[in-house]
Image 1: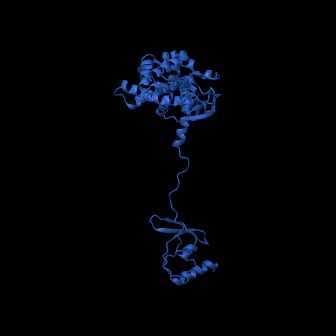
Image 2 (image 1 turned 90 degrees about the vertical axis):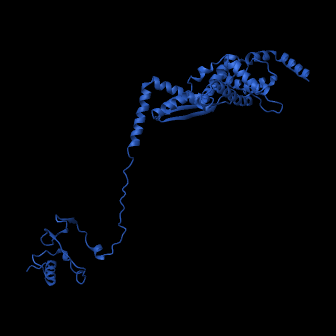
Image 3 (image 1 turned 60 degrees about the vertical axis):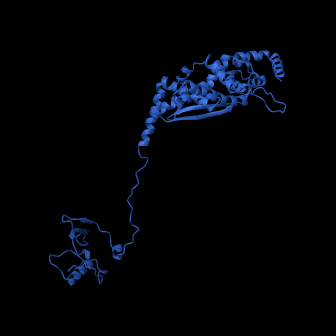
Length: 360
């Protein structure tokens, strides 16, 4: 049985000798099942279908390789930086597996030259290279297991092509830097998607713009939202550093916003509750004219009125007991106070004289 397996390997090697040798230069070992690696290098722009008519490309292997790569690199970073906190480890792993890093590795290792595409995607070779790199990791995992993936990343990548310490302490997350700057300066930051479309091969393309305090900033395009926001953030940081008029416009807009937020938008509502819904029980008080009440120097309540005859203001203080026998016919409040105390008959006579205009 072992001989049959060796014979198949030899036959496949003679048939794909050039591919085997190229993969050995890239991986540092020979593949067992070459079909995984062929699939990893097959871009979706090639309309290749299997016996069942389903399209075949490297997208599934790319998905698997992305997950395996996160696990392997996370393992390496954890072992390489003992004592470092989770945030540092996560940030370092992200730098090692981000799209730009994988694209550069694919270009330097010659992976781009092995990708099968329809030729129309040559302008996006760096993008395809990063995908193919992940797909190759997926192929290694299926062909030779986790340990082979670890060997590939440690011996071939980190030992020969990447200085993990330099990567760890180099800041390349422009979106994170922009968010940190905006928070420290209390500047309102938004990422606005301007467009979403697809290229000729059906790959999504996103266009995002940074908006600081309502002022348009940098614009970025990418094959993912994260990538396009990174480009827009980098462009915005460059504008903030190199264009004084831009940063002035941002802080002017911030000053206007904070000023409006500090000023009341409307008058403060009155909390006084009116009790005019209460119905007075004194019918006479309801029908009587409203009089102006004030306090004299002796703090006694007095009423100021105009006499029908003289139109002169006088102060009168009258105590009237609660008697309604004839009070409905006359308004005794218009009677001028006399020097001496008047009897009831005298008061009525004086009221009649004032009412009928007696000229006697």
